[in-house]
Image (cartoon, rainbow, N blue to C red):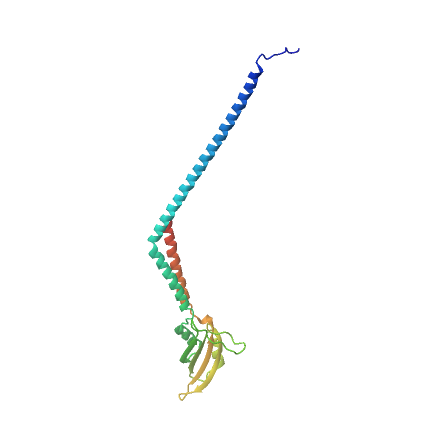
Length: 228
C-alpha cells in the first residue's frame, strides 16, 4: 500500500532557523566540554604542584631533622675518625715489627740440647728504609739479618743446626761462621741467618683490625640512632 503524500506547511525560513539553532546548540556544548577539560587540567596541574611542594617541604624538614640528630652525635663521629686514624697509624707503624723475644726463644728451641745462645743481634728494615738485598743469584729476598753465637759443650754438628733453622718463620738462608774452641773445652759457632717478611709478628696489624672493628661498630650504632 503506498503512503499518503506529506506536505510541510512550515515556511522554509523557519526550517532553516531550526537548523541554525541546532548548530549553535552543538557549538555551545562543544565549548562547554572544552572549558570543562581546561578547568580539569588546571585543577590537576595545581593539585600535583601543591603535592610536589608539600613533598619537597617534608623532605627538607626530614633532612634538617637528620642533620640535627647527626650534630648531636658529632662527638661520636669525631671519636670514630680518631679511631680510624689511630688504626691506620698502628698498622703502618707496626708493619715491620719483629717480636725479638719470641724469635729469640724460637732460635734457642731449634738448637740441640745443651747448646745455648751467647750473642744475638738483628738488623732489619724500617717503615722508611728498605732492607738492602743481596746481589748473589738465587738468594731470596730478605727483610733482615740475624747474627748469633751459640755455645756448645762438645764439637758442634753445624749442618744439623742449619737444618733445624729452616723451620723458623721467615727463614731464607743461614751461613755458618767460625768455630772456636775455648779454654774450658766448649765451642762457639757464629751463624748468620737471613729472614723474610714471614718473620713479622703482625701484632699491630691485629690491633689495627680490632680498632677498625670498634670504629665500624660505633658507626653502625650511630646510624641506628639517627634512623630513629
